[in-house]
Amino acid sequence: MHDRFLERTTRRLAVAAVVAALGCHSGPPAGAPAAAAGNVELERLAAEAARPAGRGTALPDLSLGAAERSADSGRAVLRRLEAIKVGSLSHQEQLTWELLKWAATRATWEPDLYWYTFEILPAISPFRSVTGALGSAPIRTAAERSSYLDRLNRAGAVVDGMREKMVGQAARRIILPREQITNSVPYLKSFTAPSDKSPFALSPTRLAQVPEAERSSFAAQAAQTIEGVLVPKVNALIRYVETDLAPQAPNDVGIGQYPGGKEAYRILVKRETTLEVTPEEVHEIGLRAVAEINERMQRVRDSLGFKGTKAEFHEQLRRDPRFYVKTPPEVGQRLMSYIERIEPRMTDYFSVRPKSPYGARRLDPALEPSMTYGYYNFGVNKDSTGYYNFNGSDLDQRSLLVAGAIAFHELVPGHHFQINLARENESLPPFRRTTFHAGYTEGWGEYSSSVVAAEMGMYRDAYEIYGRLVFDAFFAVRLVVDTGMNYYGWSRRRAMDYMKENTLESDVQIDSETLRYSTRSPAQALAYRMGRETMVRLRRKAERELGSRFDVRKFHEAMLMSGSLPLFLLERHIDWFIAKEKAGHA
Image (tube, rainbow, N blue to C red; front, side):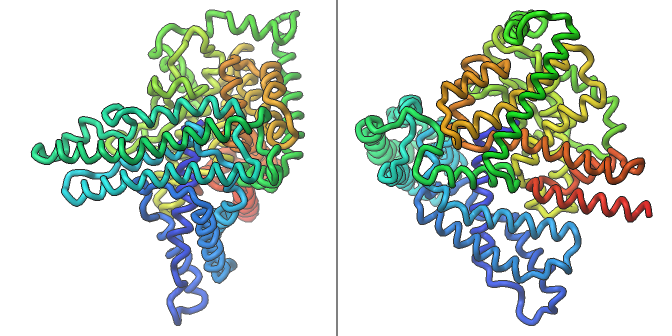
C-alpha cells in the first residue's frame, strides 16, 4: 500500500504533465522514411513524457478550463500516436505506445469527472500541493525570493479556485456530505493561523538560507502576503462552506447520488482498475470473494476446534496477547522476522531481484491518525533504502495478526521488489520506470502476499493462515462496499456494518475507510483486489497453456521487468510471453 495521497497526486500530475509535454509537438520530422518515422516519433514521445515541466513547484489550476485543456492535449497526443505504424514496432515499443495512449485517454476523461472531486477534503486538498510547491521553491537569490513572493501571492488564486468550484458544484446539486463538511472545516481553519504559525509560513531553516541583511524584510513581506491575501481568502472559503453549503449538504454518501454520478463512477471504475469492467461486475466479484473467504475462515476455525461464532473468534483474536507488542521497534522486528523467513526461498521463484536495500521503520507520528496501516516508499537521494513505514500508534489496539501478510505485500516480494526492479531497469524508457498504476502495483503486492508467499509455505500455523485470510477479506470487502455506496445507494451505516461483519478492522478504521471510499477517492480502493484477481487469472492461464513447460521464475520475470502496466495491457503482455515460450520450446 502506497502513500495514498502521494499515489493519487503523482497520478494526476503525471497524466497532466505527460499530455502537456506531448500535446504541443508538431509530429515526426518531415521527409523521414515511413518505417523509421514511427520509431523516431515514439522515442520522442517517450522522452517528452519523462521530462514534464513544472512538477513540484507549480501551483494547481482547479478550473474546468484546465481540465478541458488537459483533455485537448490528450486528444492531440492520441492523434500523434495514431500516425505511428504500430505493426512496425517491437513488443516493448508497442507497450510504450499503449502506455502513452492510456495516459492520453485518461486525460480526455478529466472534464467528465471534474465536478465529482471535493477539494476541501484534507487528504486530497490542493493546500498540500501549495505548501509543497512553496516548500520546494528556492529562495537563495534575490530573483528566487521575488519569484517565491509572487508564487505565495498567486496561491490566493488556488483558494479562490476551490471556492469557485464548490459554487459550480452546488449549482449542479453536487455537495459534499454533511459529515465530511464538519470534518473538513477544522483543517481549513488551520490555514487562518497567524503568519508565524501558518502552514504557509517559511520555517526558520528555510529563512536561514536568506542573507541576514535581507532576512527580516523578506520574512515581513511573506507574512504580509499570508495575512493580507491568503488568510482573508481562506476565511471567505470557510464562510461559504459553513453558511451556504452546510445547510444544503446531504446525509447520504457516494457519488451515485448526484446528477450524472453513476456515469462518472463507471469511468472511475475503468480508470482505477485499468480494466473493462462495470460496477455491477465488480460488486458480484466482491460478493463471491467474501463468501469464499468466509468458507476458508470457517475451515481454519474448525481445524482449531473452535465451536463459537466468527464474531466470537474475532473477539478472542482481538484479546490474544500473542498478536500485540508494546513498542514501535518491536513492530519493525516482527515485520522483518517474516522477511528473514522468506528470503531463503526467493531464488526458487525469482531469477532477478532489485539492488536497493529495504527495511521497516515507524511512520511520522503526525500522519498516523489518518492511516489505517502505513505505506511503502522507495529510496530517494542519498538513502536508496526502500522502507515500509508502519503505523506505530495505539499498539494496545493494533493487532499484528496480519503482520506476515503486510510484510510480504509491502517489501519482499511485494512493493519493494516490483517498484525497484522497474526503477533499476535501464532498458525501459525513463517514464516507464516511474509510472504507477494502482491495479498493477497493489495487485502485485496482494498476489505476492497471498499466492507466492503461501506457495512458499510462509504461513506456518493456523493463526498465520487466518491472518492472511483477514487481509484477503479487507480487500475483497472493498469491492462490495465501494460499489455499494457509490453505485447501489448504500448508506455509510450499511457499509460499516458489512465491514464490521466481514473484517477484523476496528470501528475507528472502518469509519476512516468508508469515508475514503464514499467521498475521498471513489473506486480507487477497487484496484487492490481486482489487480490480484487479474494476476492470479494470468498465472493460471500461463500454467494451463504451458503445462510442464511453465517456469514460475520466467513468469515472474515477465510480470515484473516491463514496469507498471495497466491490467488490460499486462494481460496482452502475458499472452505475448506465453506465445514466446511456446515458440521457444517448439
